[in-house]
Image (cartoon, rainbow over all chains, first blue to last red; front, side):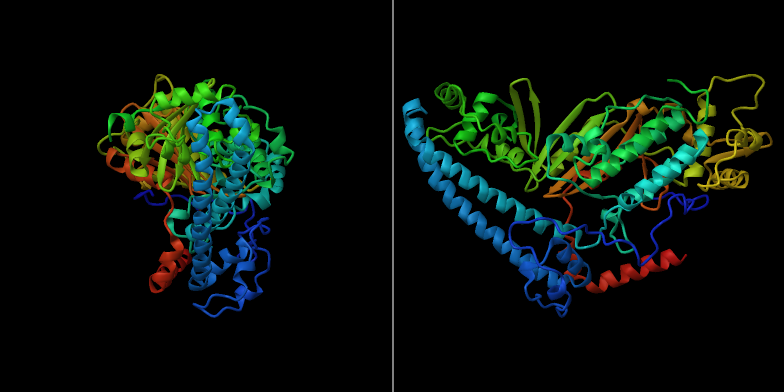
Length: 287
Length: 321
């Protein structure tokens, strides 16, 4: 994404947050996601697949299994994805059939200009059609998203290390005595936000993966605030312009785990960063 | 694009409820229209909403959403991603993405605005048009360690301070720099020493970021615009959030306009800090990398195994260096 600019200075201080040893790094994929379409079994059948063969029982594998397979045996993973794409296509055909049937009911209502009498008469049928379609669409999107995630990541992006390090980071941070020490500590954390491995392609290197609890509007708003680099970058800017600001809105639900462990991690990190933004480590700045 | 196709469309809550009733809207949980499913409410006056929508040409006589409306509804309702542009003052624009197309959506009290259906490239053009960048960058991109960045910030801060007399330009001596960090830190967390700070000064100087004189160091003139103009309150964040059931992918670009120049600040995978002046020519590419749909990497790995092996070898060699 960025060209030019040689690296200068010493490499980042490595044990500000001690990295997980090579080879012991946690698997990028978290516990298997709860899915409703048959992704239930473990990786054995996938691991035993010969290169290029579709593994037996692949329809029973978890998303994590398939992502691991995509990394180790892309050809076999591609065959799994072909199966998923076929499911997507079949579900879409079903959606189109059901939509056509629902539209016949709607057309009848439209002829009556959605008058109350017509809605009373057709309402139950329409509700049943709509609910059925809603479920089909959910299934369609769930399978499509799973397919797209496998295709886009191909097992080449892990979960960020910050998830496993946050409690230690917070402890370390609270042991620092000076403003400059705290600022230095936070600016050094950038590498923990990402899950890139040695062979992660360039276009994925600054993509952050996060596992969140089932979506809710408050979780979505928090995602914007917490999951990117926004706060650390603001800290970078304030280090130059010398401004400070008070902490933002309270994040109690996220801190208590109400939006899942990833949101809790990032809420804790956000608290540290915002506390640091309340002071100017280089002194004498504006507010 | 015709005038009707290019104009934003506004719908009331009631009109949206009618469209939901008529099986034209099936919102995902991440969609701002999800409230329709949550509430499950039918319109209070379905006949009036039907009449109004058909009169506006947004609903056909059969009760189906018109072609000018249907794709916009579907993109926002069945979105797979959200692109957001936010500034430090809290102003925000959102585009909802489905199948490579995007619709700008905004909700006001009782009203919902749907922009035209845009290709992702058009979204990038719209975003780029809202930002001002110089034709060519005045400074080289920088990749700094955290310690280097603190030294850079110190020198930049000195440039921003009102000039005091007597002073030889804006140079800071090594002792002046070290005085900011002379309070020792705890042994529990490794932090730079005096030698580290001095090494940062030398390295920044060797890289042309600082100029050295007898009295000390100061920022190279090519970075004066950044040093004086950078303001946290001017931060513009462009982000894309891809929804994959319980997994999300986040990409973010943080930009700082300083008059006629535009800078990107951020951290990188190796923990380094990056400062890059983004030129007008680079802006579209930089935005596209942040907000475009990610390519099918699996297909690339399947069809180019030899190339992947070569990339792995290069990366491994780089790491050993």
